[in-house]
Image 1 (cartoon, rainbow, N blue to C red):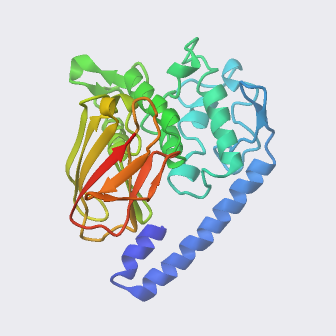
Image 2 (spheres, rainbow, N blue to C red):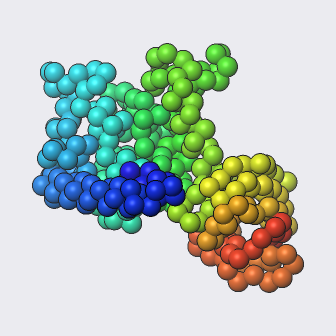
Amino acid sequence: MSRWAATLSEIDPDKGAKLAAEAEAYRKDLLTAAERSIALSPVVQVRDGTYHSVIPFGCYMRGLGTGAWGWQRDGSGGHWGPLTFETDLSATPLISTAKLLSTDDVRVQGYLDVLEDRLLVDNPRTGSAPWFLGGWQHQVGIQKTAEAHLDGDDIPAFLRTFFNSYAIHIVPNDGYVFNEHAFAGPPDKIFEDAAFLYRFRNLLVMEDGRNLWLARATPRVWFLQGQKISVKNAPTHFGTLDYEIVSDADHGKITATVKMPSRNPPKSVLLRFRHPKAAPIESVTVNGKEWAAFDKGKETIELKGLTGTVAVTANY
């Protein structure tokens, strides 16, 4: 609603402002209802013994719809039972789509622990699979678990969910398309294909408000010695983008060439080098000059106020 209001404002400022006010009122009402539901819902224990808040899939809910592991009770349903609502049509769109709740919120991180440790592991569909092979449930394209982890910049959790989800959905013999459901269902389901492309695109190029991420969630093995990551002619909110990353990790160096978007320049471009051994960045040069805007802990280099083609070198 807020995005539509901003678009409408370009051609009709008065109507755009009216719609923006309605969208903000709607946001406040939704947030009030969600926070009340969280406050009135029982906490749930996770695998390390701690207890965390849950965010019910509906604001009218008081706790998990599955109750005491509802799939074990008569009437829990198969296709659209309580477990499917908790995992597929879950509360994660409040986080990763509507952004009503921030990933910095301790309740959100606690809820993600409940989702990963209980609902996505301790259920009949995943069976006895170890935690590392989890992160998926019924319909991967609908689930927003991966997006929530990426919004929270939890890259290991994002990659686990992203790769496991599609390993369980993919149909190699039919041209590497995706089933509608885990294990089965109609192949080449359009929204599953689209969700894969959307997540893969965000792994490489992702808008975050007025900021633009490059290589935010690339696997560390992509940075092994001699590996190359190349993105060309990528459309973004800020304009077309090109970049190429080349690893010389064995000799303490990773380089990138970035053709900055120019149509609507971002506030900042964040480039991430995920060193294969997680070594910290020691120094950075941009266009041959020393560059201080980097974060060792986050493995990011901030490219701010730059235009044209930019050459970046990180030394380890």
